[in-house]
Amino acid sequence: MQNQKALIWFRNNLRILDNNILNKALQSNENIIAYYNFDSKSFKRDRWGFNKTEKFRAKFLIETIEDLKKSLKTLNISLIIDQCSSSDGLIDVIKKYGINSLYYQKEWTDEEQKVERNLINKLPNDFNLKSYYDQFLYHPEDIMIKPKEIPDVFSIFRKRIEKKIKVRDCFTQPSKLDKSNLLNEDFKIPTLESLKLEGFEVNINSAFPFKGGASEAFNRIDFYFWKTKKIGFYKKTRNGLIKTDYSSKLSSWLANGSISARQIYWEVKKFENEILKNQSTYWLIFELIWRDYFKYISLKYGNKIFQLKGLDSDIKVWKNHTDIINNWINGKTKDSFINANMIELKETGWMSNRGRQNVASYLTKNLLIDWRVGASYFESMLIDYDVHSNYGNWIYNSGVGNDPIKDRKFNPKIQAERYDPRKTFQNLWLNKQYEIDL
Image 1 (tube, rainbow, N blue to C red):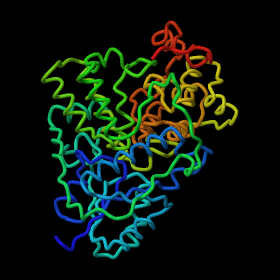
Image 2: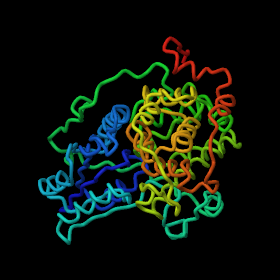
Image 3: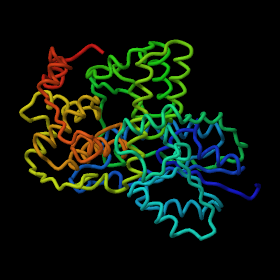
Image 4: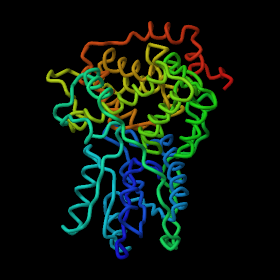
């Protein structure tokens, strides 16, 4: 073990607690370095002209890496921070520090796979690569379903696993390495400016004014579960539109791996054992299962989730009218409820689940715009962007995914009457003089 030096390549698993990759590395190595790359490709424009990562998620990511760097230092592990457009940065680190083993979270979507293939092609055949799944609630090794046999209907999937498959326990607190493991260098974290993004003040009316990082994720859990016990009302409030506490707001930390699905699951179970068990506490777990489902669907179908046809066999005719798309983006459609949701997203990087369903349905079922435009815009803007949930939801809401009712269509007028009867939400985002007391 003395001559073994490992590199942990952090991806969307930006935490030290309940981190399988970190624990595996610590079991077999006395010398460990960590690495994170602000991949410059992630900050360039996509085919539709959107920045792949806009300022809202970029700020959240910067805060997350700041927190991760501090956390790793408590274990005497240094975090190398890079801004490279390829795997060359990893190769350079491996060579410079004499790395024998590379540990990383297994990914399967196209862009992440390309980076891995590029990396592997540049490494010696005998180099020790260790990759593990670590973003699921129900681990792929445990569900006893082959990827190609994943049910195409969520309810069937849920019923097959939630009563039969046990969620794995969280990993114990990682052990601390000797102080000599730390590097003498200090690696700077990029700023919004260095990423060529504009700085901003968090909107006073944002439903997600929170900072990135595992520490903030646990602060949120402490508040939402234990201090206020608002999780006990989650099912009743989850379709809310205004303020911070109508939902758990844990999705952003989940998306970049500041917290694991397992950690949330077992915290819910602890709450149920000590305080209260009801439909609301179950419903948070239900949403975690939905998240898992979209990951399994992307495992099953691969790049189909990014293609125009989606999972559908029928060919639909989509439009790509720039003026219609811009009106949708800028909240200038003929529907005020849609407009309010789109302006909220543009101003804050956040939109409620109810809003997301409505604006996706409106873009694809009313305006007949290519669903990939909407998915790409969400990818750019959302703080809680997750590739599987984003594209899974977009193909679902557009009628080319897993919704058994392909022609399901939201009526925004009825939705507004039901969820915003006093037009409080619409006034908040459509009337610049209107503010709420947070």
